[in-house]
Image: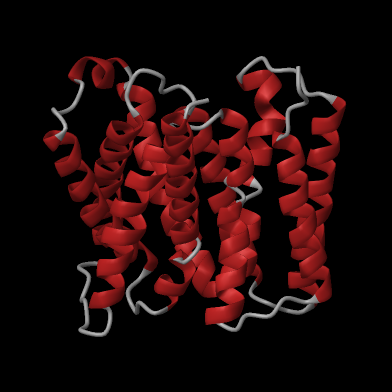
Length: 290
């Protein structure tokens, strides 16, 4: 591999890892915004969607043919994305960032479990083991929440976010012709329209305070627009296995940031659950050579 190719690969790793670290700070910013979860998602999809749409237009515009052919998974993906974020951000509030993030990352394991039906993929013994490990981790966390008397409805909301994340993965796997950036732009705009209708019918018109504004700007421009640009720019230049394994920097960084910035503390049972969920999910992504 030439020096130029090496530089491109290292650059792709850098962009992808930076995007995941940015995603890991979502809980911190959400915790400082006084708006309802639906209003935060509304602002995030509005700003992020507008920024990515502008970037797509500056790069030559949307591929209307591929978008039309893949309109169903794009529409369902965008709808699920918006509802998924509402559930996750609400779980941050009523549970806490650490536990909500861990439960959220059960989503990919749900997809793995359903892959024989959805994608006609065989579940190997190693993947069954990974599912079992994650299940034990989830039982550790959920059992701890019930025993300690924490917000049990928050547990339900976090599980809904995990289910919606799984649905999002399934439909995004069906998008093969539309580029990553165009997919993100379309889905964010669809999410904005869906969340707008949901927010107006439940929480009404958002009232943004001066204190909320800087956090909204950061989560919209940086954590959505810039992070998605970095995410897809790196994603397109890395192997599938690299992407799958490095993606677990997101929940790990979320746990670290919530501990350092929000001073959240997990019980020993929850910490064991965290190790089992992340470790089991990573085991499910590893593919033996050859």
